[in-house]
Length: 385
Image (tube, rainbow, N blue to C red; front, side):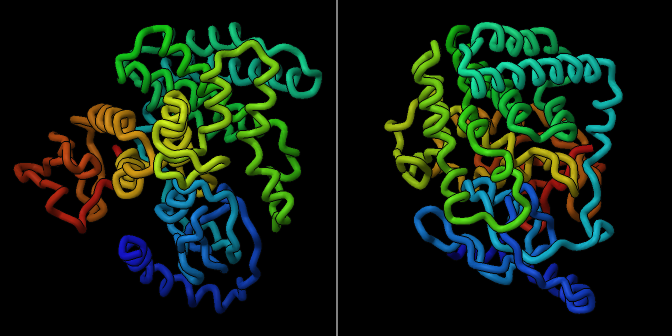
């Protein structure tokens, strides 16, 4: 509760900033919105609780990027919120770091291969769901693995994925994102080649159950009925049932069923804990949430990795397998060493040392000055440059 108070308390000045505009414009209508429809500046219209009925965000809170990401982290699908602010009041777009990547030849080749694979995946999934054909696991996995082998150059696949998310946020694209992140994560964990491939397959098919949910429910802009809301939360079980008739590894089936389970028992559908959750599902859970937290939204580009890492450090260690989460976060952070970045006070600095005890707060250099962000609670990395 105290953690929540400190998080929400920092947003009070934002409420003051927007309250005059809202009164003048009369933007007070309340709607149930999916998390992907939320925008900073919206006001939470009803208390938001987690699956254990503990208060996450109280009514009247003004939403920010960080709070929206918090909802993603806790698996909240929809909330009641008041209408949006005009686009002119939204935060600025992502940094030039990603613009440089998008202009590179490597990215253009990656983009073409990625989009071709998404289309092939879409076609195959539609045949499986609509005509009950066999799932072509071998071909789809082979094509996904070829993306990794063909694009292991100077630009990391994680960086290129940050840009790909601006093009399409569909279940198909998300599935390929998670497959590639699982592949990278399994490599960081130094798993054998066959286990890396299995982790990739688990990521690729983890959300297959969402393809059995009517699109009218997934994309509904207004309030979801209780029945519709319950239907959305059935997608892990639906995916598991669909995969039962397919020739796939049991870990792939379990990943579809268990990727929303959490180590502390706060997940769904079965509230499993710790080792009750399939080890590959534990990997997929981390990749799934990382993709959701760093995905581009309508009002901003991908979140800075350090913002994501801070959320995991604050709330993730009890919910995810630490033996998987820590190597993942450490490798993401290490990939940012020597990068230029922007602090929230406007200074442009260079990341020179990673604090193992506080991964989201490295040591940075500003001219001749060295700043340990672990000792500066008011400073944080806002974006990479």
